[in-house]
Image 1 (tube, one colour):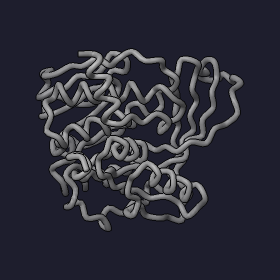
Image 2: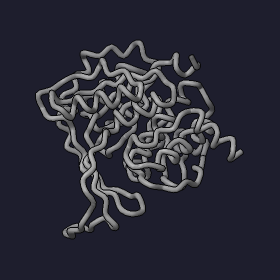
Image 3: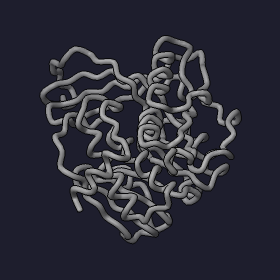
Image 4: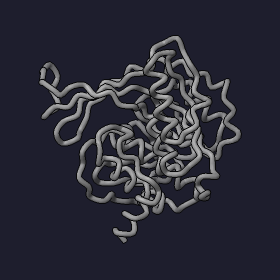
Length: 284
């Protein structure tokens, strides 16, 4: 067993069914365009990150809530096949979360999420003490995020989708991860570790407002960018566990995120640690 497999991560977040339609160009407000047949794919930022962490060899538990419906059962089975532990996933009478996703010919997307059962997660039922790192996103309630920040000092918070988070909660996080849009609402001068992702331009690590590391991703044939940010977060957490330097963590994470765009679906092209390291070796 590798060193990373002995380390334990909890991913607290959403599990959704992704309903995906493809079209040539994303519609503008008020416009109707014709698209492909609907595809049903496993998703949810939490589930995507848990699947990616497990694929990278990290012993990972999913903490979430799904409905008592066929989609919930399907999501649990799919995540288990990736190697994540689903024993901490709770059940609700509300329907399983659903994301409605439109993807254009360039792989860019627009997403609307109906959270459903995700909002019923009861964190009081979960013991976080066994975990070396906790990874969370904003597809769960703000109260859940605040409770996580109070209960663990190893919280990596992906502030996506962009929603209000108290400054005190952000300061308690070990690392905050945001894209450029989400970062506009952050005062990075108050954050010890804030990572900003910039799509094809890579990512930057800030410490109290100062850039301490930057990394650019490899060039790949992009099929679908859905879930690439989630793979970035998972890859970041996997190397954070190994106590890599900020630059080493960033290089690994941007490479993993880039490799995740080579297939359809948020969980369609999850790289292994070995694959990422091979690409890094080629770039060096």
